Image 1: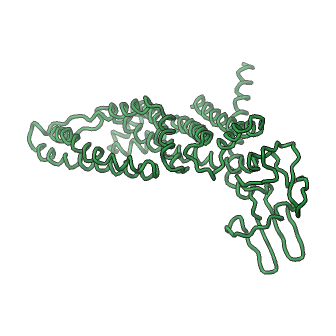
Image 2: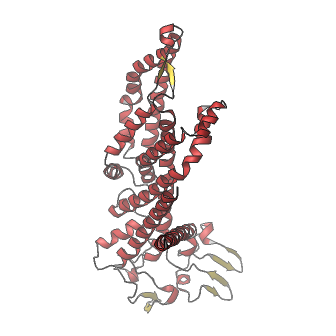
Image 3: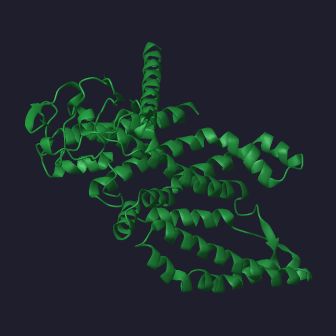
Length: 416
């Protein structure tokens, strides 16, 4: 009894710690430009005042970055600088060549070299070109969290929609007249030809340009496919006036969606993402889209299994007897009750997306070179094996983030 209580207390504390860490990361990502930047937060002169960080003003004075105080006041100017006075990826020639956190760092002060102290220092060291690692970690937090959230939104939308359809309707929940089923079956071949076969070159040509453009072309192909299938159903509607073609047949929705999930799961997701990212234009949006379009299967499977359980409950039967439509029951009754279980898959998807984005950044694929991420900071250690700070600090951030998300998913799963 005592051991069980101790385990529950420890479990609760670790869950709270994971939540607090993610909240901390969220605050860091929202205020990254305020915390780490080489532009002043606030500048006031006799002629007026402005906020260079927020307004995008080009005002910049190299000497202000090395002010001894956070607020420097003279007769003519008041300047408020960020706590970390380096922009992510900005070059500092005086401290290039992998300066460690404890190593002596210098600045050029009117032709003489002076030591950096206090606010001036690169507190977590520098990279090959003198880029500040602490600034990179702060701004990399925004990139990683954004990638995880947006990928989860895309994957969650696809997975939840398909999982609900497969779990609620099954193979017998949707019926159509036999005539419509026959004409649709006949129309699948021309639909595939006009929707995908003759448009393959358009999708292939757009992949090196942009994954978004290729996705739009693929979406247009899907719309064309559905349109041809819909047109082919019109003769079936006419045939359904005859007794033989009027009888209902079931659409195997569950079978079809499960086969799609099996096909996607059988493919090496990371290899596909790397292959497409390697030939497409570097873009963070491309990476988010690629990850989101390939990581939805676990969400769909978990949604399907939970909806299948819920559809046999008494309150769903009561909703059916009241005359509610299947779509209303599915989205208003079944799905809200399945969200606690689905949230486990969503959190796990976020962790996988962050880890995948970091891996791609480490390999130098897909992400523009001017965007600093945790993975790109880790990649810098390949050029200098003695630069332990390039491994420890970004690696710790990735590790703690994934650990926190997994802990949250585990807690939700154990309490559902």
